[in-house]
Image: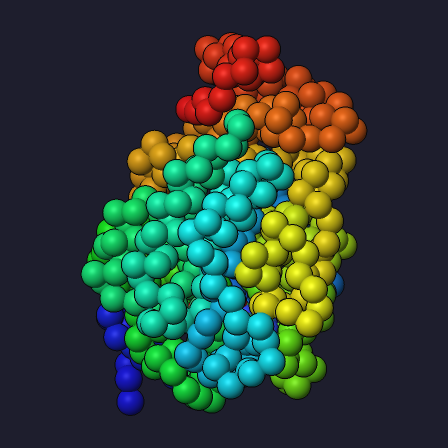
Length: 475
Ligand code: SAM
């Protein structure tokens, strides 16, 4: 039997089933242990995180008073690390050809009625122009796994195309990549193509369930999938994004698993995950989410988000348009730092809406508002929508990004960057209502830049964006 070892490079040792089961037993045994829960909360208040066992005890806890404390702490940590900034992005679906058999995904190879599509480079260009015209600067590209239709060369060509398009004042300045687990050599190529984060959802950390949920195709190989982030880091990518698809397995197993994965990356590479995503299964062509037994309600979902927030304070958290406006609102408060807006999950969906008989979408979108509506809504809730992509362009990736977080300089760096990129959005893309609200937000928030010199430079840049048609400033 495999023995738990966070430093091991073997999937079954760093995501160890025995350790997870023991963690869940420990959490059950201590879920009413107020003294222990208090000690864990005190440790979390130091803002250096808590481990998978401690987090699992908090997840098992049902005491209303303690839960209130946990939520309040999550909100406070969110504020301390991320201020009111929310980073905006959109997914771009390149191809839904797929050779895998994932039973929850409409791209599965046996699905004969989904419309298979793959964007040509001209179509990529049209999609990117549509995304730029909405105001997006940061994309996550998505594709099924298919070595014939979507080989790495195709993905690399798309990345080149995306970065090359300069339409009006638009530009995509960061391309994150969500494609299937691959080789070190291919990760090197993605790194050299200038990607931001490499994102790969584990789907489930439970090996047995994983193998049943991925009955055929290369994705069936649990070890290869689970060890992908180590290969990505070996290939030079030091910002990686984790996620599980909630609904497939018991959520308590998944929380312990994802935190063990984060601990493993920290132990081996000296840097934890850049982001954690929290997708839940949605209805899609050929997929009925009710056939999966482990769906979680909104309350549990928010509890998980709050606990991840305090467990890994330096890790960004992402929520997509799989979630409704009201769930997103709660989740933002408890820990989410990045959201998508105006998303389409169909291949080619930004240029024109898909006729129903041609459905190529990956899942139904719950939040169907436009990007402008989302931006306006965020500001009405007191947030600062940020289109910033500065960090990786300034070489602040991996531990260098973490160093910025830990130095307390975020308010002198991320905050002005958020305001300057928001100003670009307001001038180039916002509707009149959003612009009016946004200008007020910027005026007020400029005063919250601590260093006088930085404040003066940011104010000058904002004036240059507004009055001199200048763009792309960053600290
Ligand atoms: N093919 C790549 C891979 O295997 O990782 C890219 C993944 S896919 C384009 C992005 C993610 O969508 C998947 O990792 C999965 O978690 C999620 N997904 C698949 N089917 C879904 C569904 N029915 N509802 C919600 N999310 C889904």
